[in-house]
Image (cartoon, rainbow, N blue to C red; front, side, top):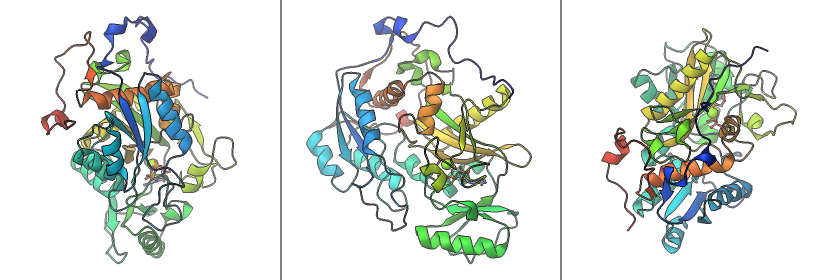
Length: 400
Ligand SMILES: Nc1ncnc2c1ncn2[C@@H]1O[C@H](COP(=O)(O)OP(=O)(O)OP(=O)(O)O)[C@@H](O)[C@H]1O
Ligand SMILES: [Mg+2]
């Protein structure tokens, strides 16, 4: 195997985090009361009826791991279920900030439900806001935006009935998936279709099973990568690890390759493959850093950051990319609430490879979120003439 040449993330002459004087880092004005907002498997009830409708929900262990990470920084934590009691519980608990990983219960923008509640109640929260979380769940809408700003994504068409004429831009084989799901739901080898008959059959099944449009796109036959994104144009001011950021305010994390040619569903990282744990039969291989040239790694990292920025994502995301038959990278989708299950979720593994411990990943997301609401005293040692990101020009959310 060719030696992987990912550029080093830590410069040799950079001081280590622990060597820096304490006042060179941003600090919370006081310890916060942090509410972790999530939908827990077995406790939250999805509104949809599909068998795998709660596949995106989190485990209690993940919530506990996030709480423990936050508590290492001196904050108190509480877990709140993102269900219809959330507004009442938020009013009772009055958190300083919410660490949001809620997948939501259903509807056409379930991942935007918890952020919408928090905005109505003027409660600060982490990661992307309402519009972006709604958009990123909807793969068709996301692809329309990427196409509009000139980012590469496979040719596609959305079907709402299955009877629509098929666009002349589409060439077989094609790939069919629910437009608004995650965790590989509704995706397996049957997603790859080779004829109009197969296409219509799969599209109708998808619409009926998931009660939503089906997205049909060109089947990308090349290698698959997932790229973690952490940052914001002014992130360095509020980061606990400012030395990791590049001038544009983003960390270049090592690229992960998902090699599924010998998995349970060869060539498709679908729902079944996503339920398997490392070591189990049929699990894809996860190679991080991916064995690719530094040029391709940089291209994928920059593309992921552009994809994140184009839909107004904030602070953290994970972008899936696949190469087409010509070896050109094409954006598949973006996860603005990437899984945070320690040692298992792609972003956590990617960060570990980069030397970013789970606790530091969680605290980075928390600090970047907190900085948007004036909860953090910014680092005095960082430059102050950084560009003001667009979210600042919107009505700031103030805690009442
Ligand atoms: N156009 C495509 N061509 C080839 N394979 C595809 C295509 N779209 C999706 N896939 C395969 O299906 C998998 C799941 O697709 P996608 O990432 O869109 O779904 P998801 O359920 O939202 O994933 P996640 O768990 O990352 O949220 C991909 O990782 C890839 O293996
Ligand atoms: Mg994906």
